[in-house]
Image (cartoon, rainbow, N blue to C red; front, side):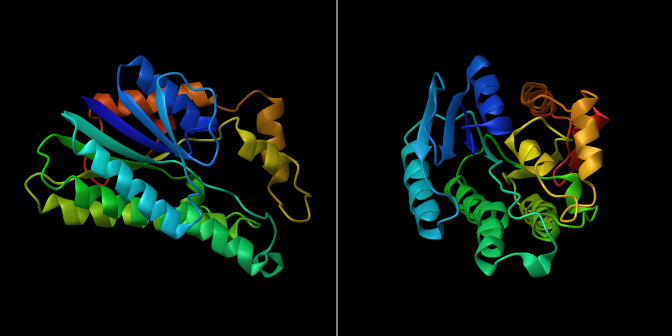
Length: 241
């Protein structure tokens, strides 16, 4: 059985990934706050910005999966939030903490639990994290988001270095999905230009029909994954494929 666990599988890229992998006969699990209409996807309701709930819920799921005959297993760290778009000094402490928790701390916790739970498996095991070009390009108004995505890239490289030493280690990669037509983009375009100087670029991308669809991104990630196009630790932009 091929298993994939996707965080934030109720909307955007996560939902498109869930639908794509179901079509390809994977056993798909979605971890997100919302339960939506997703056929043949096992949806687990959890607030990934709550550390204890994240740990306990994922641990329970992994314990259940140990009973199955697994031929491959993948964790996709997809859930994330942009948070308040404005200069850092204008962002409330609670909003900073919530973004870092969801974008960075939860992926670290989930990855840790995933690696520990799958240690005895000799099949294909991997972690794919949805990162962003914001990990390497600073955007004024996105200080927290950029920081959290840079952390995801370093998490990817470090896990890969650790797991490379092992005979049946976990493969770890990060993918930049490009600019995708999701709720996050709607949020960006509704920002005041005084809080986000790059606003017009994103408005233009929408107006010129230059945004990727979530479905296109999911198709591309599936191809990258199943055709083994990446070495352990690779961080890639889907525009390269």
